Length: 458
Image (cartoon, rainbow, N blue to C red; front, side, top):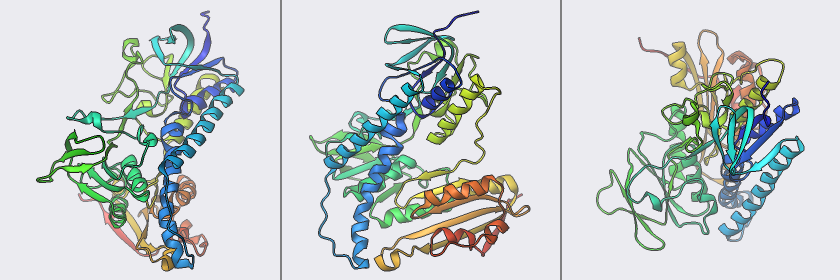
């Protein structure tokens, strides 16, 4: 019988890899893990966590303004970007240390360094060869940058968290999660923000009503949104300013202090030795896996963003747990990802779960749409011109709720609860029979009455 240094070696110390390592160790396996940056991965270090901290910071500008409608006299507020970043860094350092300590407490051997695959059972870390019965690739994703003249002058979501100063004028390129979230953050903190997206509307893949509603609210907040347009080149004017040429804009290029590229993320597989070892990748460089996380090489597995499927932290965590149980538990387990809620921490935020109207119509043929927009109770006194959108997508035949979508304050918190109901197969009658919690925005989901029935065209 072949002897290995470890039963499981994990490449990458992000959410998916850490969860797999800890559970595998709890099941009795000898486990080691290697990370070449900081433990915690994209989510903790330069993703979900620091981003939401900045979202909180950005929202105070509106909170101070809204307070006047409730009788508060608020002196002129001053904001310090360096102070915010220092506080953010302190919290991220704490969390990264917690991840590493939890691994050690779970009897996982923790290594610092880049791991490279040598063959089906061998990796190299800092020049040392290590063998393992199973190897898990959990190296996440990395920002995509197009090859255009001057792209070296742009930054990504990796660098934006550590800028020494808040830029006064920012161009954000892209229309997805990261783009709309940072548009709200930087605008709320006082920058003049322009968002440029080559598509027809922001947030491709989300429900069309959600996309249109957020667009309108972004514009209300003073963000300039350029659709059907793209950047062709970036030139440096001086130590502070950049000149940006954009398709569709005639004449003088845009002059800004920073260009943030948020045009998506790609699997972080380059330089890992995967292809050389025979691991099959898709066209985007993502690791191809089956329902149980196994690659084309039986001893090599992958979870999370590196597989180019659902790029969400809770999904990576669920996949990591399932893989550990499959390899070292009593029976194989696949991650159940049939109903995955998601949030966009834009301003206002989005919460969504289940099918969009377009997806439901294509799958079911006839659906009922319940939709409402309203002014949040808070803004009856604040005077702010912000509206909330809620929407239910229902299968006409079975009356099962197929999707729930919301744009407005507390949307992510509300949708998490609805995700449970939708996963359990709740019907519109179940929603109607639920007593409303008043006064709240969430109660609107159980008081919707007016519907529009849509049928798929033959």
